[in-house]
Structure formats: C-alpha cells, structure tokens
Length: 411
Image (cartoon, rainbow, N blue to C red; front, side):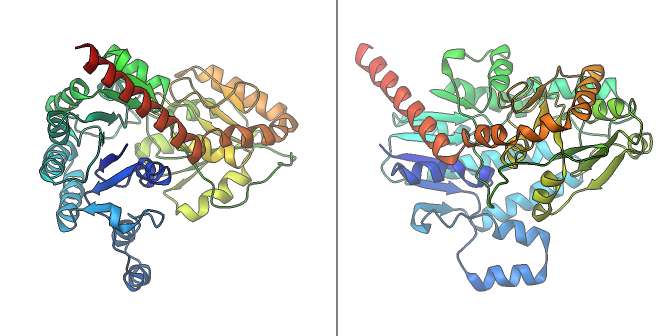
C-alpha cells in the first residue's frame, strides 16, 4: 500500500509524510515549497539573519529522501508572498482561497507515482481530491482546525471582550464552502481531538467518517526526570499566540485575584490583543512577546505550571511540550484529551475565571505536589510519540481500506 501526501506549508514538520516513509508506505510528498539540500545556501541564510528566508530554508526534513519529494518551487514562494501581503492588508482568506485552489489544481495535474491512498489537508485539497476519487483512490482529509464553529466561538469572545479585540476580517463563506465540499468528498476525515470531532459533527459531518489521530511531539534534548519545588510565588507559564481564542482574557482576570507576592505569570508569544488590555493587566504578568524557539525550553523549566485556558484548540502542541519537560498543565476541555486530572495537571471549564483562579490557588498551595507530577507528565507525553502517531495512522488507513473494499464488494 502506497500513500501520496499533498500539503501546502510544512505543518507539523511533514509529520504524516515522515510517519508513512518510516513504515515504507510513502509514495511521494507533494509540497508547495520544499527547501533544497544545499549547505552553503542554509549557511548564507543564517548569516544574513532574514527571518523570512530562515523560515523558507527550514521547510524540509532530512529524514525524508529528496527523491520522494515533489515541490512546486517558485510557485510555492509566490503563493506565500501573496498570503503575507494579504495578511498585512487584513484580507488573508481572500489570498488563501486563491492559493489553496492553485495548489490543489497543480497536484491534480501531476502524474503521480503508483498509490492507493491520497492524503490531503483541509482547505487546500479539493481539486486534488476530485482527481483522486475519479481514479478510485481512498481519499483521506486531515482537518487542521475545528472549522466554522471555532470561528463563531472566536466571534463570540470578541463581543464578550471588546477591550481585548483587534480589528479582523472574517473568513468569507466561500472559504468554508470549499471546506464543506472536501468533507463531502473524503472517505475519512482525520481530526486530532475529540473537541474538533464534536464541533464538525455539529456542523453536519457524518461521524462515521471521522477518525481521531492525535498529533505527536519528539523532544530534541534530554528531559528532566524530576522537578524541585521552590519557595516564593507560583511561577505560571503561558506560551503561544496571545489571543482571545486561547483564553488570555480569563487568565488576566484570574490573575487580578492574587497578590503580586503569590503568583508570577510569564506570557510568551506573539501578541494579538489590544495595548489597552495589556495596560489593564495586573503587574504580576510579564509580557515577553514573540520569542525565538531556542528560548522555549528554558521557560518551561523555569515554571511550576503551564496554563492553556483555551476557548477552542484542535490540539495545542504546547501542552505536549510542557509535559515533556515534566511540567503540569492547566487546560480546558475545549482541546485534545491529553491532561489527566490530578495526575499530569488540571482540567477547568472554559470561560470560568473563578475555576481558573481556584486551580491556580491550589497549585500555589501545593507546590510539592506539582513537582512530584513530573514523572507522570513525561510518561504521558511519551504516549504521543512519533511512533505512536505512525501506528495510529496506519491502523486508520488499513481500517478505511477494508471498509472501502467491503463496500465495493457488496455494491
């Protein structure tokens, strides 16, 4: 059995393609852009220090043989430039509609190697899915987010917290119409959490089409086996984009219930809330803004607990990164089922300032318990290894292939 993976961008650093290659099932990876293997070019990029060039040159995976990768090269770069320009103009989805369709059309026109399965990603697969279905291939769609329901949840948060909200342009209905066509075409829709599954089922997706495939994370450095409690304020870490969707307003309001000597909150990540909201935040919150990837591990190790009071997240890899460092996590149910209550962290209701504040107070008062959770946190993170992801993916493909063959035999 061979699988074609087509993806626009380098989502999860080509996780699906890597998993299929490692198991001998990858026919080819088709990417809009894939960095060439030229050491001198990578060295020049690092020397120039241009962030955009660094991102472009990072879009490759050395464990994937170049012979198994097809890239659209300059077309991919032009598409990304259009999207960046549209983002600056406040109309990103208009560009996404165009570049997503252009990518899927180019994939559909390729003379692909022999394969039985087509694996695409939501929003950028429609035309390629049509071509694959016409050839009798099993068509899998990886749903990268919770879709239209999440957009409505975010809009409700913007109305609830106008002091936090920055101006945004809503995605046009055509953007989600394209997604719904992909849902209809797919033989199976892969989601990375129960939360996403439930939201798209509410949107009308047949639940029998859906398989849950959690994401994976592999630490680059050796992890601590234990963490030491310390005297002083509770050290809380937020790491990720600072948005209403991820619940920053509830953390700020919870922080207002503590004396400065009780808690220290570090917020690291690109800030997408108003300056007025930051000015209104208590002094116990330190706002770092966007930080280099090289600094994240030190932040995890310096914290006592990680917080993610999200309104909606398909998965949130940051919770795995935290657990990998032995760091307990406070999260809401509106995300993947990763954190185990009382063992690797705490699950609080979304949009509940009181519950979040009470959980933070519990953490402050039981610092020894937090430190003792480290081995369980690391053990839990191991359940989301690349090997586990590969096994789950192959099991899904085999199940869906068997169902397709059964349907064909009984038709």
